[in-house]
Image (cartoon, rainbow, N blue to C red; front, side):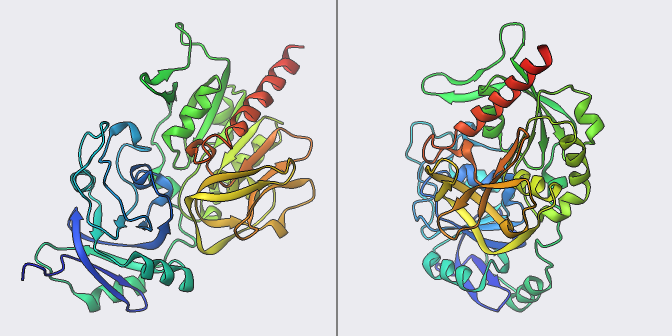
Length: 389
């Protein structure tokens, strides 16, 4: 039959969705989440924080602006797959270098269109992020019973360290700045390769635009693998240390990252964390993290800076959260979600150490949260001045 479904999504509870497949063929087991952003589907699919997750897009016009390499947050797609309401159309944008289905196919990622995304989103909200199997077969042959069994057998993200899978394998330098209209990405170091600050960024799944935002503040960024030790970090003589975003259970990654972070905390060095980096810093300080029902995924999340009273529209992507009730004495809650009151930021009293759950580099506000990068730069400058004087 010409209209035979070529893609199938099976939830662990036995719920089945059929649709039209695009991108790569095959099958993948993952956690299913939904994202409410109206733009940025390419950035979402290349965000390493989405490893082992299939993303349902609540906005229907996915693929309409095509694909451009400038928007990649990683060298290739990282999210396990994508679910959309309408099949991707031909791209219509002056920046487009290709179309979404071809790009997904080259990256080995499955797409599925023609799905009732409202119904699917309701299911995720009601039962929590379910374990699923997503399959694409041009002939429409699906072993549904086997898919249900595989979805039920999958262990899920709790206890799973995924940072080691998406982290860089060796260190590298980053000096590319943020994008500017008509100019593209610029270099932030001077003609001699010098920059005001040295920053070591721990790569738990770092997005490129975070590194660009650090560089834009005058940082010569050295990116180290997630498994780097405190000794390896300090060997670079950094003015500050950045803890990146990333996927998986923070407690699992914390098994090797938390001892390293605690050693750095003893040095009174400026430390800034985002997303998973925020959760790891909290763990290192003695707090706890918890798995959320369906997490926060989107570019329209209101977050309040409780110390200034400012409300920011933020981009979020996390399925775990810091338990604010577990914050020890001396650790101050600085930001909260206005959707559900969950923790979105902390700082340490008397130390230049802070972190946030949301993504200030993603600019949905568009620049509501960029002050956090300036705060990090200011802390490094204060430390430099103290050392010089």
